[in-house]
Structure formats: C-alpha cells, structure tokens
Amino acid sequence: MHSSIFSLQANSRIEIFNKRSKVNIGEFVFIRKNVSIRIDFNGELNIEEKVFINDNCNINCINRISIGRNTKIAPNVCINDHDHNYKNVDDTHLIKGEVIIGENVWIGSNVVILKDTVIGDNAVIAAGSVVKGNVPANSMFLNKRENNILQYARANG
Image (tube, rainbow, N blue to C red):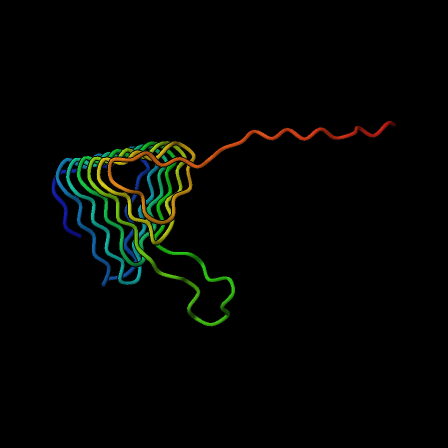
C-alpha cells in the first residue's frame, strides 16, 4: 500500500487480503464514514489525488479499479470490477474486469458501477444509475426511469 495524506473516518476500512494486491492512494483523498474498500487476488486499486468518497460506499477490487483526480462519489455507491460466475461450478467463480473512472467525475447517490466500465473525464452519473460499458467524457449518464402503477382487484372477504 502506498499513500500520502488522506482522511479515513469512523468505521471505514481498507482490507487487503493478498500480498500481491496493490493500493495507491493520492494526496488529500477524503473517505467518509462506513466506507468499505476490499482488495484481493492481484487487485490493483488506484485512487488519485483529491478524490472524495462519501458515506456507506463499497469498492471491491480483484483486478483493476482506477479513480481519477478530483472525482466526487456520493453516498451508497458500489464499485465492482468483477461478477460472480454462478454458472461455473469449478474454482473460477469470479469473472474479472476493470473499472476506469476519469478525472473530475461526479457520481450520484446509490449508483452501482459494474465491471468493464470506463467513465470519461468530467462525466456525471445520475443518482440511482447502474453503469456498465463506456460513458463518454463531458456527458451525463442516467438510466431511463418510468413509474408504472398497476391496479389490482382486491379480494372481498
């Protein structure tokens, strides 16, 4: 683990489960309360300078996650660079990918970022979004949301 000055508030933790894992945390990174960061296998986590990670976020890295400088992450965000391979019964129970988040990115509350995602510089990820794939620089990403209300008959009795 290589780090400079950073703040890790109450009940937050960085867990490194494998001596081959690598963690780099830049200067002036601020990690709020109840944040869980886990690195395992040959995972490489790079958090550049002046990144802000708000309360209750989870970062799970077994391959590669990079968060660019000046990125702001709102509460309850989950970032994973892998999926569980529920179809495979042998030892390869994880499917590895990577997550690359550019510089000056704003990630809203309750966002889930999945493996094989690249978010360009200056992008905004709308609250509640599930992100997989490429998000261009200087753009806003949001999942289409619809309110559907289905009426149902109430049983008498």
